[in-house]
Image (tube, rainbow, N blue to C red; front, side):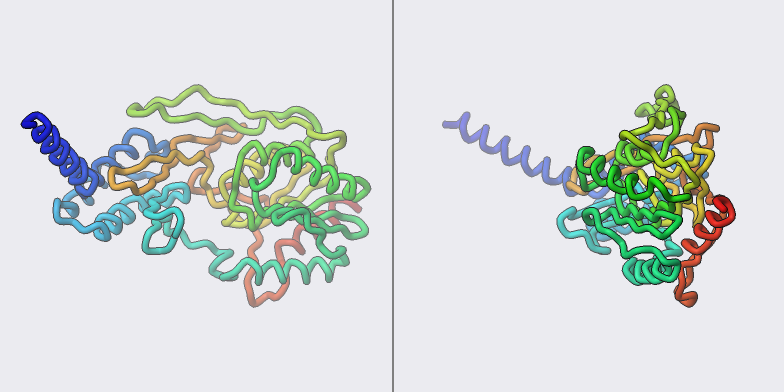
Length: 345
């Protein structure tokens, strides 16, 4: 009986100790800082001294720090990285400003058009003015339209469908575009998804096998990286569109969308119009703190074929054109049509 009581007491002590560790703000902060210290791939590029950040923010945490205070201090520290793939999520089922910490970045496209739908209305009006047909929906994230000379393809995500479904949609679009003089691909509303989807789509516009980009992963706890992994563009499907192509970008074009843009830039008949992309390329590495907060970080580096790392900068367009609400017309789309007119007549 005494042994059972002793075991019971030990279990209570163990559970109390585990709970104290889970709720200890110092332990949680140390775990957060250490994971970034061991894995984050772009401190030098972001010119962030992580040791100095520790010296600045660690003294703000003590055993009496509340959960909200810990969240606020941690968020402020991580936002110095200005990285859209760096997040703290307290409740993934109910993401609000109170329980989610993002990059804090301001986006031109969102500052001008608080809701994408208002800009999409302008896009439709401009397409109609330029004598394009009504948009044909292929699911929620792909639409296309045609004029007498050109095709327009809008891709609002790089996820949400299986590769087989994507192949059917792209086959339909390529068939419609086949006899057109040029195509405009609009990824301004595309926040990303999967790299393999980006390459599947890009393959429908690829003339031959070409190097698309490189990537590498930081080796935990060191300043070393894995060997460069080479990604290649390859023609996909029974036919490809390889005439002049304009890709429209915004500062919301992010992650896997940027991989798409980076790969498309390797094609000699592609021109980029719009704004710099967001500049968040790495896959997201997720981990949990003892208090169950979910955290993501960027543990990889992506490079163009000439070894440029656009992390934090974004891929610059060949022609920088921005839309403003006051214009009541899609200047980016209009510029794309102007370029096609000059290059295809």
